[in-house]
Length: 293
Image 1 (tube, rainbow, N blue to C red):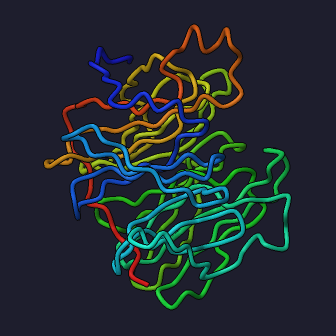
Image 2: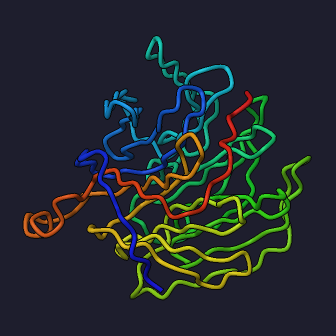
């Protein structure tokens, strides 16, 4: 079911590859990235001001950092950004020895561990992995032979982890141990037909439902915890990349999009491509977990 939903473009950013929005409870702002431009954005919904930091390299994911600033998944691994000084410090390598790969989407769990995956620049094959960065900066490889490791999320009771491999066309669920960070019993929860788009980023709401952004699908879909489709929110652009809940009541759904690879004709038809969008779908999200390392 497509839902008639008022969609507002809050920032006409023209992002090449807008991605990874994270609600920052510390100052009530939205942090998000432009992957291929290596840019980190901090958007203030009250003023509309968008502050930009240049990481100097591709950035696949962003998380809040308990010590201040942000934890990042950069091209070759994990890093920390001090937003006051602008200093970027690499804390762990993962893809440095594989220049044909880069890090991609990621998120922190409730214990403050930072999970992020990788992918091949060619966007093909099975060269991707999923990593877990511990609080002591140790890296554990969780999954291998992935196509494009993408969206992550956890159930409200913290007992199920969700993960998207975009090239596999769906969402997998795993039993999750929040104390150890271990996963088990992989099963397919959601299949997305290729004609409907490519599953990309994801967030989980307070009801335990999954919101999945569909790249080349022009929408965000909501799935119930059992994997059944519930509704879709349509956007005026095709390349929808990720979403997260924010705002004082966590009732605003922020959605990133991309203009990457679009022709001049495409951009005429989709002038909002690369913009940051927002709607209020009538449900609230879960609190953001920062990296505690």
